[in-house]
Amino acid sequence: MALPPENNEAFLREVDEELRREQITGFWRRWRVAIIGGTVIGLATLGGWLYYQHSREQEAARHGQLLDDTLAAMSTGDMRNVEANLKTISASHVAAYRASAMMAQAAMAALQGKEKDAVAQYAAVTADEDLPPPFRDAAVIRQTALEYDAMPPQAVIDRLKPLAAPGNAWFGSAGEMTALAMLKLNQNAQAAAMFAAIANDKQAPASIRRRATQMAGSLGVDALGDMANDNQNMTADEKDKAE
Image 1: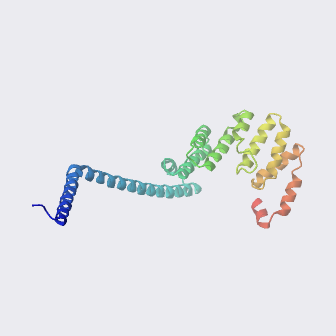
Image 2: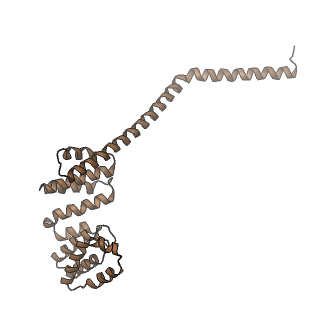
């Protein structure tokens, strides 16, 4: 006996729903281990990443505090744990902390008369492209200052060329060493121009500007006029800082 159309449709819907339930339960029975395993692995991975981030933040905080304490100890002459502390900080994943520790290690070596060790440490800072540029530039300046007497003049000029340019934060120091190297090569005109540029660079330290003015004058270039004009335009605070 045939089912009425409405009963037939209801029957088909029940069959369709039953097939879908069977497909779902069959899929789950077949893949439940993989699904559960994947979920667990995903949660474990997320948990591991969060813990890793938290650990790095805690490590960074420890290294930051250790660096502050170490520099404070150095300023008072307490060197008992400085070497060990700087070694720890120089392995930090925070580039600025690592660079600060490496620079301090190099400075310590220089103060102790271990110039080769200091030069090697500064060179390591310069070569580490993960470190912030200001630290690397400072390392170039200090390394060159230590090696200056033993370096060929042209090597000094070539190394410092990127820094010995007006507007660069290290123009005063880099320009001064570059100009002196130029004098060794009898490039007096170029040296005089460099000294004059330094003398008129408001960002350069006052002591370097004074020396540059004197050197420029000895080479026949009067930088005093420009400096006098600069002084007239300086505020009282700027004059105090310059002095």
